[in-house]
Amino acid sequence: MNYFDYGDKEISYLSERDPVFGLAITRIGHINRPVIPDLFTAIVSNIVGQQISAKAAETVWQRISSAYASNGGELFAPDELMSADPQALQSLGMSWRKVSYIQSIAKAFSDGTVEAAALAAASDDEIRKQLIKLPGIGPWTVDMLMIFSLERPDIISWHDLAIRRGLMRLHQTEELTSDQYEMYRRIYSPYGTVASLYLWEISHEPT
Image (tube, rainbow, N blue to C red; front, side, top):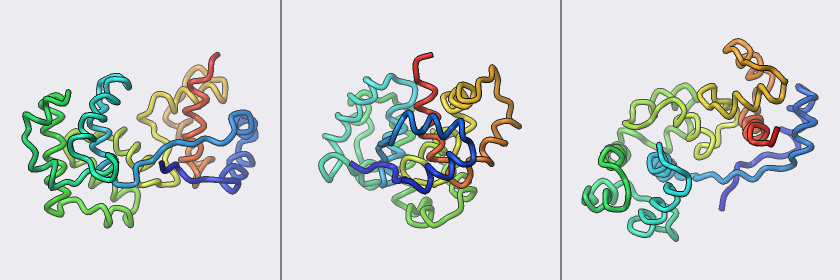
């Protein structure tokens, strides 16, 4: 399994920029968050998990992986999912809308409309522009793909409620305005993604 890669450099930087955050980072310790390096596979995983419980998503993911994935159930080929029988995909536990999303995205990867290698070399803004065009992919999903597939180093998602909750808990405030969010985003840059990993943990700590 692959994990988001970070180390002492990022931790030291964040701790110096925000000593309160540094104390939380020390308390929590190193975080191993799995990543899916193959972008198309990561997109399929995100679509499968939309609007259902984690347990249900895991069940559907196991079914679709067993049926269509290679490399020990960890890699999906766009051509194969594009040409799959839609009814067979739906029978694995997905809605027809999700089946449509997955097959449309598979076609975009297959015909070169989306090129994973080109996106890997593109700017964050360009990645957002390209991925947001895909059906079923909204701003939050783009942010998660940039973190957990493309492993971009400086992503703190305004669209993620847990991230915002983590910032409020960390800084003991009852609200977080967009201006405050932007201030913290700048403080933690260029290692915003590592900050996000810890903010998620903070948001789920018992109060």
